[in-house]
Length: 481
Image (cartoon, rainbow, N blue to C red):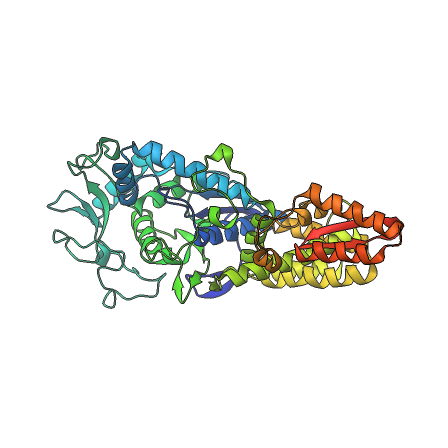
């Protein structure tokens, strides 16, 4: 298979350090608030990556870290007057609940930065011994960027073109404005639980150093794949390369993967711009719900995963409410096929033409957009032929992407805010007891040959977003539209 390497800017055949083993590290969340849809895109995209690699038979070790010490976390803890661990614990639980709703499988390891400070200090010491790090007058330990040959190779930026200030903290005590902090000297006003003893005095790690320490400790060097969101290429991943390769030589990672941004009106969705929408808002969960009370809407959660997966992971993706409506309508069509035709539990027949096309798409840099189009082609054919075998293969292939695993009838009867009919409805959606009573009333009207009343009931239900389908033998199925 071939993967687009952000470092070489080309698609490359995947060649792993050890045969049939993949060591993958992905930069995870900074846990100070709820995850938004931009985070969802990263979580789902790399979930699909690791699912497909495992489907191909690779022994995958997937590490995705948690940043639980950071300026934003400290500010949040001070604002709510709680210990850092309580703040990060709450938002970590919230993230895990979001992941479960979206069908994101847990990574094999989920290291937290606060538990790997000794490893970070070891790297800083090595960099200092090699002349790549220095302690400045303010107590911070900084990385000397201009002493590392090749800085900028991932982002494609030259040192002369870089400007301090783009996610780079400027300090007058730095030797160069582009130098970045490895260890931050503690400030008196900062909480006590944000400080560690070190050879450089009381302080805490900088943001970038944590991933260098955790990836090396848990996976070894070089990594087969290093991934993350689009905004991490510079400076975070660029600085990871400088730290790790500066300390140990060789390559930090053989393949670098970055998913595309989720856009809102030509801007990337982000908390800093205030243009974000949380995962919780999108799948019908109260913002303050504890993890134990996280009752998500399964139809809306699957719609959101489908919304992400039907686009190629590297492409910019535009978010609008209409796009969510379109995603809901699209995945509903496949579920309607599974409901109409029926399915049985089946293994994937990788010799079939559809499965071959699906595999070719996924082997071509995880092209889920083409893979999803294969499922729609199969659905059209399954409907035409009334083929249970084809419908079963759709469900099996969908499972590789983390989709289409709900009972179709239950799925199609669940309430969703993302059908246009429901969006236009006034008042709450009809409950199942009311719908079933109306269907029974309609059946009685048909038996009495009162077809006008039967049609009236069908029209009333249709206006309320309920579509009926009469089956042989007098059975009537219904779904929400």
